[in-house]
Length: 124
Image 1: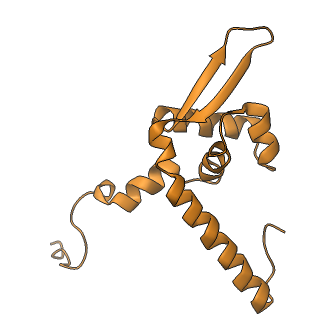
Image 2 (image 1 turned 45 degrees about the vertical axis):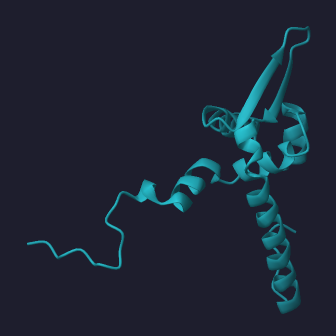
């Protein structure tokens, strides 16, 4: 016998929650960081990688491919030698700017709180 569902818990699938959808699309260690750097305009892969210390080439490639598949990033390949590839935000990707800016402000405030309380910063 199963217990009745709690009236305070949602009974719909977890992907019906807009926050779950957002986290599924931009979640992960590097996606939001890549979006942040692309807010400044088109960037080449090597430029993104240089701006994101710690990301491996493979992980950045995977994250950019996922963002491209979700319609947030456009990959432009220029027909020249040597090959030139640039990544930019699509119009849909640009709609994430307020979210990324809010994350930036929240992260700065959180770091400040840690500094004032004497806790160490894991990114320092």
